[in-house]
Length: 535
Image 1 (cartoon, one colour):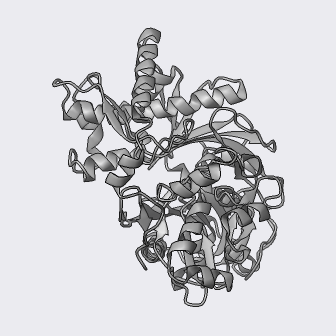
Image 2 (cartoon, rainbow, N blue to C red):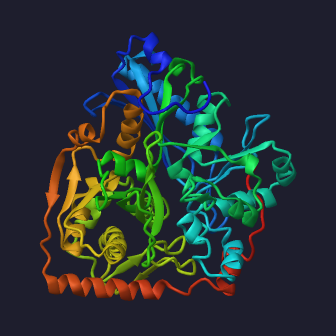
């Protein structure tokens, strides 16, 4: 099957099955792991499977993944949930795919193999190229077209780097032999055995290559980055039947009916469809999205303008986004780099051993600061240290940094929209941490609301696929599935809240202007050369 069918249109495979399939599978290809989750028609989890993949750090500031490992894990978790649930391919109405955004995979269409490791969204090796472009017109040089600032975060500079630094890549690309995709494109290409090279509007809007108004690749941006159009996937709606599974064999024939970048999927899973509705996802990083409907709203306060979703042939919906690079990955850093904890779950107990952070503040600017600052020259800093501070205080400061960074982007949202948030809907793995959620409410001064299903990223992908295949009729039906788990009310006094906010701002100021020529030499990042690990 090739091409896109309109949303809700009869699907030949489903007609052959008697149109009885009421389960949906979400594939969630994230930064640290890949999961598959089976949902029933009530939006409840039936079963799930998950596998982590290696985080590859060849140099300071470089972050890579092995695309072949990602595909192996994707195939494994998909087969696992079918076996665990006792369901066959014929019992599944559709698959929705959600993914880490901005990460760049480049592969050879002839061999089906990546030409190098994927460059992950956190990677900062392309900063010199970004700086050169920003020197003429500033970081917002292309924001009018793409909605995005010039930053290493987005895909375009990563694609260009691969073409310029992997032997033979430029010639192969110009000859039409190389394909690019964010992880959704790579996974779908593998699922369909090379029949579909596609993405959706939400992922395309994160490349620095798509025109927000036309929802097509921008010739201007392609020329600017010297990227052949032939490399790029076709852009599809977020909810529509776009192909069917060929591999792995147990899943063969299941329609692929939804594609959403992970943060847009989480917004979908929170049923935040209307303008002004928002969510904050606590994952590897944190991402606040607030919908703006069919209006493209430009931020004056450091936020990103992005596509929220597109249902079939309906007009696209847009959002403002506050992207924070390091939150959950800071807990992983405490575990893997410092050995303060054995598992990520232990951080709450460790942080709960003290009443506060002992005057310490942790600014985790490992990849610079993203929204609302957009300061690539920043680096991580722990300030306010005294002999009194111990491992408990460090753990607490790490958790509190997530709440403070979220406050930064929420302030920017309120400044852009002119409307204060009355409450914050949250999701993602870190929201299971009650200590963090309470501190978040305290530092914001508004209720923080956690839903019963906190893994809303996968749920959103399932919703998109289920809308396209008739499992659910409309947005109202999806809203009916949302259930509140717990509401955290602020308990901190206004004076204390203001004092902590001021100290956080002071801490952020201490992390700036760190990256200079001396720092680049010591980090081994004096230029944008080097080579990727070959796959």
